[in-house]
Length: 99
Image (cartoon, rainbow, N blue to C red; front, side, top):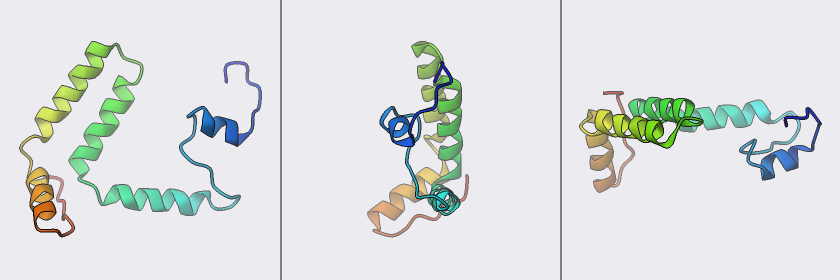
């Protein structure tokens, strides 16, 4: 990557630089499918995961752990957490509100 040399997509996938490969012309459909899956997750949790990944990826361990702890504390007593647990126990799909 640092050299700017081109390499096959399969190598990028093996190296963990991309999460999946798609057939030519299928990337948008796959991206929309992933976006739809994410949209069904609890919004507050998705937001905290994104923040922890973006801000903690290259951070020192202490900083990354602080971000994780902050996310845990923010999400510990949310309506979405209670809904997720209730839905699991009642064997139904959760309906998250972002609260």
